[in-house]
Amino acid sequence: MTKQELFEQIKKKKSFLCVGLDSDINKIPKHLLDSEDPVFEFNKQIIDATLPYTVAYKPNIAFYESRGAEGWKSLEKTINYLKEKAPEAFTIADAKRGDIGNTSKMYAKAFLENMPFDSITVAPYMGVDSVSPFLEYDNKWVVLLALTSNKGAFDFQTVKPSSDKDDELYKQVLTKSQEWANDERIMYVVGATKAEFFTEIRKYVPEHFLLVPGVGAQGGSLSEVSKYGMNDTCGLLVNSSRGIIFASVEQDFAEVAASKAKELQIEMEGLLKDKGIL
Image (cartoon, rainbow, N blue to C red):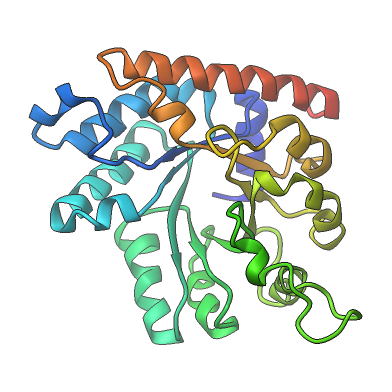
């Protein structure tokens, strides 16, 4: 998917919502456990219910690979269903990969070829040779970790490596990675719980899309993120996982998920109008 295609979907659906499919088999509604594939059935109903309000879906790979072969089957069914049911939706493999070149090449093949995700989250710590294999696929994206939503982000990401004159590590990631690809190929993960950093981040990456986790269960503010992070092409994919998919664990889980997604979409529509995008 190209950047322009993604922007067109944002305008069409009046939304920049990403639904995180963190589909923990221990949390899904109990009545689904009798299904042939409970996690896929859960995902399928969530996708069907939320599709009118969202432009992206992000399975967190840990919840699938932790279940071994059965989990991988659920993941493959999910991404194939998305490509069949919602080919316009942007898909993100939240895998946080990143290793030496040959290994990264195999990770890229797994998620961008064998499973047709549009993008994959990648850790930048090992540098260009660990990221470049993911950039070899046309119209596929790297979503590079920059400033994450967890408390431990301050352990390294905001540290100045050698002196007060140096940029913090996350700023060096933003700067260096732009030598590897442009804003048509790289997005950045910036946590919603770090809303006060968005103004500074936009000085470094004014045109790039930012994947923003942390709205909802983690307490991030959608209005604050949008105020400081939105650009003229929106430039944001705001993720909500637990706040949507586990809003109910009863028979009505899909209906409630749709309601929560719609609430966010309505708020996003107002923010897009305020920016002059709609």
